[in-house]
Image (tube, rainbow, N blue to C red):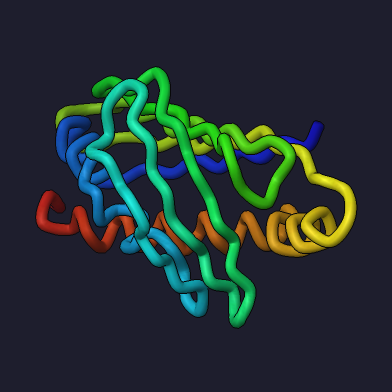
Length: 150
């Protein structure tokens, strides 16, 4: 089963990183252009909450439903319960390195479907594309949390 990991630090306290990710607008802020996120039904992040959204990659809609588990100050896991992949489990882990620096660890386990959607996810979620997407997320997270710089 394919897996992907990406780690980075931000100059912000753990609570600020947690609050940023709990904001219902975080997905829009963290999605790189030219992909457009259409939020359908986003529940506040908590244990068992569900988010429904569509990722528009050009004219192609990727309809997605995510269930959130293991929600805490130190992160959460979103599990695709409906969407383009056969399996998608994305664990976000927040580790306080100091009062002003937090490490964010992104880990994804995923599997591709067969057929058309398998081709789409193999292209969109290739390791080079995931690296680009998470590099954007790193820069966006640092930008939105820039007020905590020392």
